[in-house]
Amino acid sequence: MKRREPLSFVYVLGCSDRDGIRTYVGWTSDIARRLARHNAGKGARSTRGRAWQLLYVEYFESRTEAMRREYFLKRARKLRKKLSAGISLFSPVP
Image (cartoon, rainbow, N blue to C red):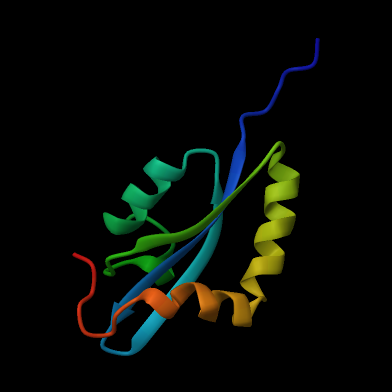
């Protein structure tokens, strides 16, 4: 019997800081744990020291599919800009 992989998620995070609005794209198998790690300063180097909020999530049956979608979304600047449109520049999320 083939062992089934856990679901994989691709996510887009957003935050507001003195330099403007930022977005970050990543993938994980546990979205809640990953967001907590980013906000605790233990995520990717570019996410440290910021208060991130989850803007968008997609799920996939395999890690490979999620990684392909992540690669695409990292280059989809227009989509990321649309997703971050609801973030206020004046009141960053704590």
